[in-house]
Image 1 (cartoon, rainbow, N blue to C red):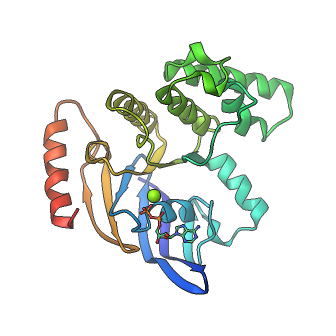
Image 2: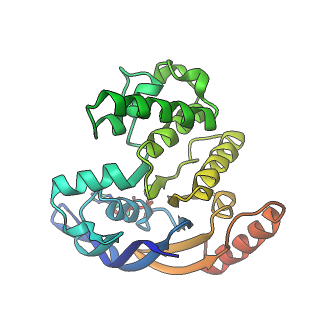
Length: 254
Ligand SMILES: Nc1ncnc2c1ncn2[C@@H]1O[C@H](COP(=O)(O)OP(=O)(O)O)[C@@H](O)[C@H]1O
Ligand SMILES: [Mg+2]
């Protein structure tokens, strides 16, 4: 297995009102190809900051974030934009879909940014249709983003995040705003994408969502305090995985 993401001594410090807040303190971890890793921990422990810092959305204060063979923490803004567009997918709450575009137009946008070529854009449209079919939202392709349910919108976000075939997908609370059935559904779709080879790193508060991942990191006060490896999700052992995770979270002080 090859390493997709390697994070070394990552620090992130915010300065607000002249006060220094060391949010991430020498965080180290790796994500291997095909892994689906959940990040859990108390509110304010630095989970979102970690996700933003390793995905190039925010500049780390110190440390290395190695994607493939590049230290993305050391790239220029332009180089970083290109790496993010080509190799990373994002499902972040604040990365809203554009209101004046249809669902399908929103999904193809990150791919259109990479080419003006007509034939290539045709291929992108075809791939968009395939993704929408897979995630069962073909019927809302032409809808405005205000004309769909929360679950549908989240599935559209997943399609958008996959349009450039990323090596790794980052998601902050991807099921946080969904009811149980929509949440199960989104997790099923993420598991499918993961099975097809895209590594996933997601933040969640939901023990059942975490139990579907292959590994969980537990972060407290800007440090990884523990981790548990569950292995690939396979049919039938859901309850056993949830029991294991629940016991582990209790040990972690959740
Ligand atoms: N953009 C920011 N500017 C200043 N402080 C921030 C910023 N983002 C997060 N923080 C601070 O970093 C800490 C961790 O926040 P966050 O990563 O959002 O935690 P979590 O996602 O685990 O709830 C909090 O103390 C928060 O106030
Ligand atoms: Mg958060």
